[in-house]
Image 1 (cartoon, rainbow, N blue to C red):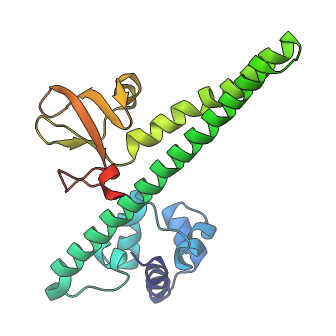
Image 2 (image 1 turned 120 degrees about the vertical axis):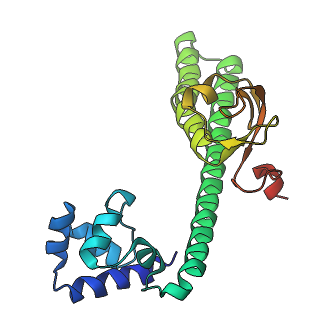
Length: 214
C-alpha cells in the first residue's frame, strides 16, 4: 500500500467534506496530530476506525486502501491487488521481526557467555563473580518472553499432519519442545500433536522461513 497516496486521498476527501483536521479528529475521537500523520503518509488509520472514517469521508474501505475511488469494473482487480500487497507487507514485517529475534538472542547469549567465562576464570572476589553471572543472565531471562512473543505472532505454524496453518496461543509456544523454530504442538484444526514448522506465508504449504532465505 502506498501510504503517501492514501494520505493525500484522505486529505482531498476531508477538504471536500469541508472538514478541518481537528474536526475530523474530533469525530473519530483521535488527535489532530494522528490525522496529520495519516495525511502526510507517516502512518495509517487504525483498522478499528477505518469504517467510521470511510463513512465520514463518503468512501469505502477499498477506496481508502487503494488511495483512489475505484470504479465498479476495476473493483475486483483492485481488491485482489490490495490484498496481495497487504499480505506481502505482513510477510516482510514478520521476516524483520524474526530477524530481530535472532540478533537479540545471539547478542544476549554472547553477553551471558562472556560474563560467565570472566566469572569462572578471572581472579576476582566471589561476590563479583555472582554479580557478573547475574549481569549476563538477567537480561536474557527478561528478553526471552518477548522473543517468544515475536515467534508466536510473526508468521504461522504449519501442521505436518493436516497442513493447517495457524497462530498458536503464547502458552502453547512457550511450553512446547522445539529445535530451531520448529515446535511440537497440538494443531487446533486436526487436534493432533506434530512437529510444526514456522512459515511466513499462509498460502504456501511447503515453504518455511528458512527456505525463503535460500
